[in-house]
Length: 177
Image (cartoon, rainbow, N blue to C red; front, side):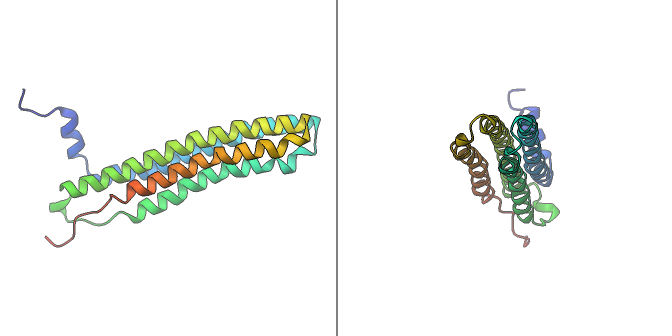
């Protein structure tokens, strides 16, 4: 028993790197869209509620919904970038260390981008909600809170940058055996 590797390590090595890549790409786009939807839900409900008191806020506070939607676009862009990293590998090299590293790199990149955008969508949604409510009370607060919202939306870009840097490690073995 001491010389055997754990079942987890064997499982991770025996799962195809293409499976890890596909899961990473799906997480990048799926969780990013989830973050955008959650942010739009939070912002939109507050915006509609605050617009009852001050109808003037609806058009200018839609910028918060646009910031939330940008989070989904970040996920789509990274998913496209990760998809272009996939290459065909001969069956003899599919479990080569270089193939495994490429699959893990794409998987990790997808997880980082997806969850960074989930948190970014929540952040922008909550700030957008407070922006709508504050703007309904005092219109001079709109620009001040909008600046904070822009900084919150930068979190998604940081995740995209880290994901692209991590996906640069995805190099598949050459086709010549």
